[in-house]
Length: 140
Image (cartoon, rainbow, N blue to C red):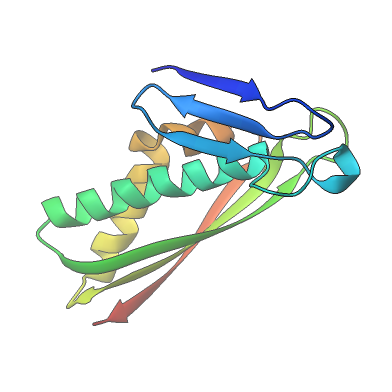
């Protein structure tokens, strides 16, 4: 896996990242940090990538378990250290899983498997952050 991150120059802190799979993502800093607030911050990208990683796992595990999953979203709320390096110190994942006749213990197991075995991002972040999760199952 590879990517290239390029500063766009000028008076801002905007960067463009090109992934090895051929996709492009912009990142920017807050105004107080010299940015123009035009795109997500790099640490927001870490957090959203982690959410994508674990949501992907949960949907895949539920589908493989023949659960009739129709939707899955995860809201991440994180706290960071006050001193540099400002690593994540606490992250809560709130899953909302929608489907028909979903088995609550199967959904919970899928989330736990993601956090403990499959989601590389959350497993890395667990080295510095307390990871917790909540789940809401919606019939539909």
